[in-house]
Length: 147
Image (cartoon, rainbow, N blue to C red):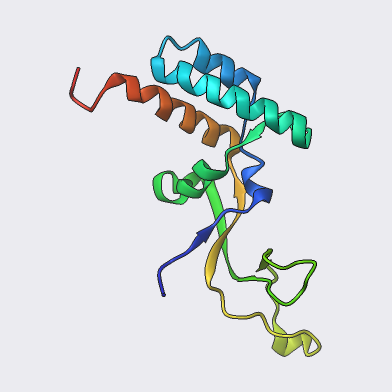
């Protein structure tokens, strides 16, 4: 389509996680929105712990929005991305070619396919979590100027 695509994989979203301390912060905020999200995130955190053995609940969806609202919190690299369809074992998996191959010099390596996405390679996890929490807590303040 030509539309710029930003991708944030699990390897990055798992670096930005809600922990028990964040649930407590939301629960004790005195904010109805904070208390509501504390309950939701506590459930999500407990399921992440029980099912995957994780100590933090990954912020997958908020990380997908970071390039739009806080681009400085996430670092991307242009890369070719495709969805594997040929292999029965890997069918449906996303494959990102992050190699920077100079095929002309390597001669034995196939050249990289044309980059088609901005792939996240790093995130400031604590700052991303803080941004999400502060955004949630800001909803009780009402619209700007509603003092």
